[in-house]
Image (tube, rainbow, N blue to C red; front, side):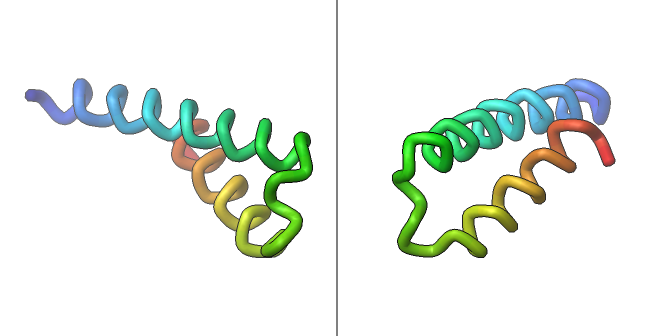
Length: 51
């Protein structure tokens, strides 16, 4: 697997995780630890966006 393939796969997984986290936050499933989930959303969003 080339580096580009690995990067694309990592961004794809990050996009899935960011979407799942965003949906769970919107549905109120993350109220127990809001700061943790906000940090996770920010982290996976950065990976997804290649930042």
